[in-house]
Image (cartoon, rainbow, N blue to C red; front, side, top):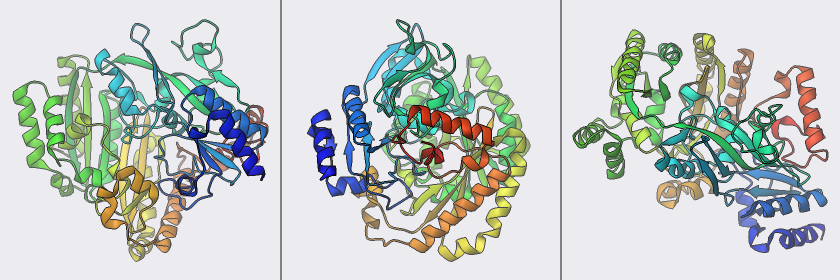
Length: 525
């Protein structure tokens, strides 16, 4: 009866069409990409306006019901999974308006539920873009979700994570109060700068929703690069590739780049679809300068395919910028010199296709043969690159018998992000397809594997592997993004720093209702 009373009040506050409480929907929202099954929430709220989001939070707070914010649902760190059945999930994807594009003052303001694909499309005609402009999953991933996770990929080698592109956020606190940070939080001032007093914006970046539900954000704009080209390199081992990446980062010319090992090339569906389909080829042609060059590039992708990637233990794929044509030529020469010092130059098809169609369906959330997939990551100072790669390899070598026993395939992705080295091992294994995979990819993709049974022993082995390498990376001084409830935080923080974090949580959320447990802040309130 208390739940019925609350649900009735919630429907009155936001409209019954925005509240979903059927068992199928609620069970769906109890899973993320990796962790399942989780605790089923009481209901899901899909506000279409900021006023409806405010009403939902105020109603939940009045009944002391927990609130879990959710964006595009592409996370694998329990960031949007309830800790109690006395929880509502607020899905922000219908808060998806582009509120303002201000080219003279170089900013864009959007609601938090906008996808990165929407932002990219909205900016096309302006000749501008944000420094960081989305993750690979940007067709689904939202701006609010990326801010909560401190996401990186497109533009990140040169411009850093999404946090570096944020001028201000509008956040709904657990009390129902709406606050705006940066200069947009002043009376009668445009949201053109982040630094209008203490940097309160940073508090809500990488918080995985622990401090508030994001309603909107303002991102800074710069002129989109007009001079681009692509490079690829092959390496005999990951250490050589990582050293090349660290050295290349100093050139300050790579928009985005990623390194993968042979296992990633063979098992990633995204990589294996490199030259699949007329749409990709036409995108490659359109992204090239001139009709003849476009046709030549498209034919090159078609004939190259992805097979060439397996010829190398590791391969690196770069999108290179230059402010002028001459600068681009100089940047390419500098990067080639570094690449050839550590490896050999190879076809650039992977980088070219990735940039020509940046926001494809998130096929990479399953392996090429429908295997389940989950990563783990850490970032390190650039000077630690070689030591980290060696320690990581030693750990996985010690775990090889266990991985073989459970049929677990290990792959790696590496990036440089601003001044940081990013290392992401990932695991593929045979397991059941979840409703989240099915809804995200569609039955035409997952249909052949829908009858695959659960494989709990292999899944538990993957959990153990992730925890083990996580500890290795922490001991090496690694740092994590997208912490959620998966990565440790308290144990790696100095006590005084942790105490300050818990004090902030108490001040913003005295009843502990906003995404309880995120960042490990279960008992902070």
